[in-house]
Amino acid sequence: MFIGHFAVGFASKRLAPRTSLAALVAAAAFVDILWPIFVLLGIEVVRIDPGNTAMTPMDFVSYPWTHSLLMALAWGAAFGLAWRAATGDGRGAWVLAALVPSHWVLDFASHRPDLPLVPGAGPRLGLGLWNSIPATLAVEGALFVAGLAVYLATTRAANRKGTIGLWAFVAFLLAGYLGNLAQVPPSATAVAVAGLLASAISLPWIWWFDRNRELRPSPAASTASAAAPGAPPPRRG
Ligand SMILES: [Zn+2]
Image (cartoon, rainbow, N blue to C red; front, top):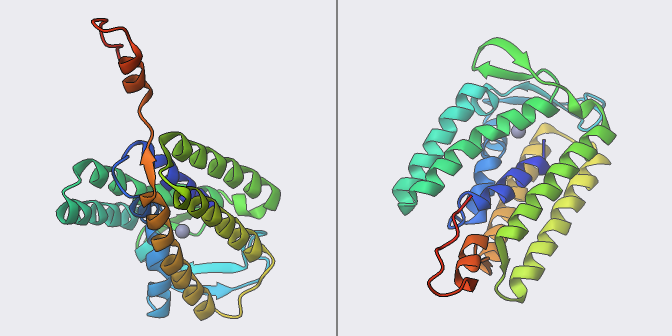
């Protein structure tokens, strides 16, 4: 999956409102951020195979260190612990640790049966949503709209950078997503380099617009402040 991972990152802002959206998206996409490095180092293998699925010409020959369920859980634990040590943000650490393996679940829905459970052994799984472009666009599109809606309900622009930066990024992301459909990359190396570049552009961009947005007052807090003095505070459902 591709924009589905962004959707999960955007939506998780509600669970960890004080954590930068860049960290949340980086966690949801973390194993895809590592993957190009592993491919360039020759530790994992991808082959260009037009028509492998309708959505992508990539044949994921071997990627147990980034895309097995066990390693996704391990990377998640490492990400959460590192975040906690670096920032002291305990709540964010838990959310980030859960976001990393969320990637495997979404990829399980979209990939052909090529995802291992553990490195080096066992069955390879995948439900193959990517065999259908319309089904993929419907599912990923709906996920993305929902994730973005949660983010917009959780934050509001603090200034124009917070509005323009967000929407320009959404346009950039969707253009890249749809543009990829029409292309067969020349080589696995080209795929890996493009992946690294995409992360290097996206994450600072996300960090920047998220910084220029602020949390909306929670509905409970605004109801409480609007209530008559002396009235009991509304119970949070
Ligand atoms: Zn992936």
